[in-house]
Image (cartoon, rainbow, N blue to C red; front, side, top):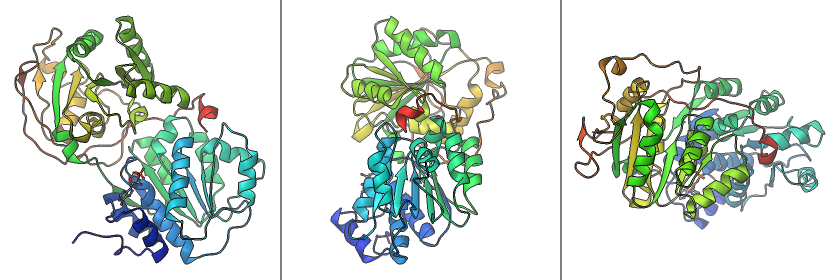
Length: 446
Ligand code: AMP
């Protein structure tokens, strides 16, 4: 029998708010997380935005407050949620207001880039729930305008993006100020080693929950693989983009510098492109995304974390210029095309050094990506290349993970393919893709 919100132990005021919003069925992350949070467990959740993650923590937190309905003291919130960007923080705060509309609790949001006085006044009014970006939170704590001694629940959302944007030191400072006796919830879309290390500092005996993108999105994607020498990748990319008659293209690069370089190379051959990654300011990223959405640029080059949350209709081609270091990411990347029932195409480039990454992807998707070998830059792999040991990863691999996918080879069309094409879903992969790095854009985003 499907689980309903009524069967979860949420009180009438929350049930009413859910009915107001016409939410009938909990999403998978909500189904798994809500009971654990209500039982008081710490939770480590692997989920992306768009899965219903916010309600998965906001609803049981509001239920906890309504079971213990005392007012927070001025400047001493009972719940703290930290998020990497002001947009996400505002969205989370709005969710608390919406879901808590029939409850007496106050929430407020604080972030940088705007005057602090209204935020100081709002803290003075004693909100039970505080949603914040790390930089402004620390500023206000250091000024003595905020005290976390009464904190009961701490949530960190999009932890991987937080690290990618350079917030690791700020996050550590915040953790140091939290009372030991608290419940902690930790959400991240990927689970690299750096994220697992951070979670271990925050969580006690956590329960793990994980949701993966729906398999149906990848079944519609025409996947192919090009073997190419590393030096020929720019020319193959240009060839693929010129071959694509219309629609937008999203190109994935392993590094931020690589993303900049690819975009520059494309602009030099008159293909309008821009790059987005964690070292660009929020404003620059939003501008690039708006230009891409409007079709003013036809190619966006992105790193994995920056591409998170890109939900742009009309992406007809995804190119894995570099194969992802974490095989789970392959499914997330190619899921950017074929949105809303449309067909999409995903081409992956495998150079002489990337065969071990390719093997990992094949394990996760339980099929071999069909090879296209009649493009001008085909580089037939030797046995030596195929059997090469994995490249050093700089220590950012790790974590448990599962990826789901289905795939479909398509014969004819753009080239001859060889290799397996059996469909399947499920499998194991080690998760993770990003390393924390301090970014100069911090003050612009928090
Ligand atoms: P989130 O992943 O938290 O950003 O949520 C994604 C979207 O799904 C938001 O617009 C929510 O309002 C919506 N949503 C969350 N939970 C449910 C649900 N159980 N039923 C319908 N919509 C939902």
